[in-house]
Length: 555
Image (cartoon, rainbow, N blue to C red):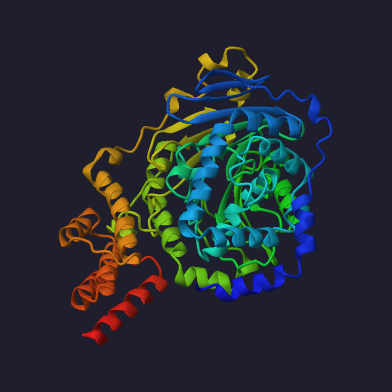
């Protein structure tokens, strides 16, 4: 309830803003000509569908591949028609996660009104092209959640989920880390870019990953990696060799939605071929959260960070170096006096991950995609310290939606498969993909390049990995028991500790259980054990010490 004051403010404003909300809920893009667009997909199998030249299929690595072409409305309808079952899976997972956090039906209805008020200006800040595309997709969205919002409005809101997630986690729901290397730092001197997208909205949300290859009527062809229904860009590259990745920055909780970051980066991906063009696009849009946008350019043969926020704008480019690292704090001069950015550096886990990425890059003489994947999968802390699986100070936090690697000068991209970024990285050549999509019988022809595939991380076949998955399940069970004042067997608590013994949160959960059951001596021992580990943030450390003092007073 730390944001109760903010919620009350929303209530008071919402009561006098119903007119603006009604207009936003009723607003629709121009859909002239929709009656003439073919909407009937052909089902060839449970994993292969076509609609005219558009297609959706599942490859042998379990990754969905979608090809779209044409005008915005055509693309949107094709995307929705082809992937309707996948869209339902994503919505069920996302709304299910919301219901898990907010169990009251009455509060859910209240929440829908708050979200509508918050997003009342969203439609004014999304380019018409993308609203039209999203409308096409929304025609195939589930009607199960119409009480929350109608399909088009709901799907428009979903494109700001990344922004809202990290604004409220500020509240960091996302803790991504990325890097770029070139010159003497890579085997061939070319640009090599890697990133982890640590967006987590529940296990089910990440199961069906989708790589989209888009051939729009205007702009450049491009690929993005995400999930069905997401028409924005979270990670992507176009056929000009321009790449995009995003890292959340420290944001003030905004009072109104503007342009979602995924929409801004989609526009850059579709219409920019150089860093200069990318910067020009970024400058003309108003955003509502803080974000580092890493842009790599084959034409410019360099990488920069475009650091955007509601009231500031900066460009960061390294000098006399052949690597660039990005976590969740800003590095450009524009933010040197920014208090929130300083707070992110001193109190969050961003600087730790930045230093760990720098350390790992320094330990590699010359990088290639295989070495890049190994870095993205790294689970240890600084100086290879064991900090527990799932620790947000690690580059591999064991929750990533995906990892991705680019070689923009060769138009090659590697995307991870489940679990997290530890499954095989599937390789694509963008020029070859778009050439192959013109041919018939594409179902029989693999567009991924098997010879360039990066093997899965051997760790996923070890007892430690299986223990971690058990740990995740058991941690939720114990936390649920605490919330519902239920008893947990002592033996179960001991087994839980053994599953992830280096992780501070293991002991904090055990300590919390004992504390709420008034076993203060056992609780104090557990909290002291937690404090000895690599605690994720200063806020977490304060919380541990607070509970330790409470235990000492009660003893």
